[in-house]
Image (tube, rainbow, N blue to C red; front, side, top):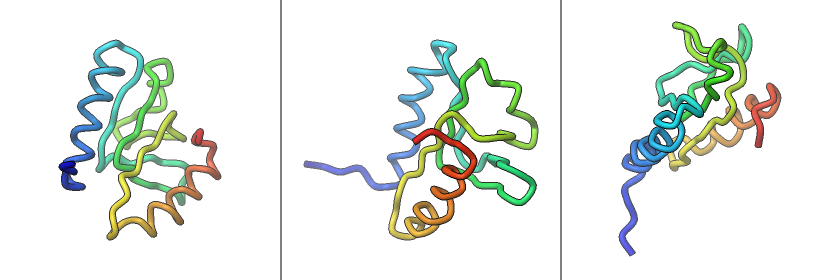
Length: 98
């Protein structure tokens, strides 16, 4: 079975999510670099973030100001520790659904 390179996973997933969510008016799909501002000291950039259109008021020119409805991290050897330890804990602490 052919496996796509890690660098191809994010744009492919984003394209599918945009088709399913943005094109139907359900949610917005954001890709890195897009700041998710959880508080004044905690700003992260997930690979992809989903925000329902009904919550579009938390999206500003600075980024997503508050926990997104969904944060997606594409794990790779070079970012795995940061994604699993720092970002996952921050998302959980600020109420991003699991």
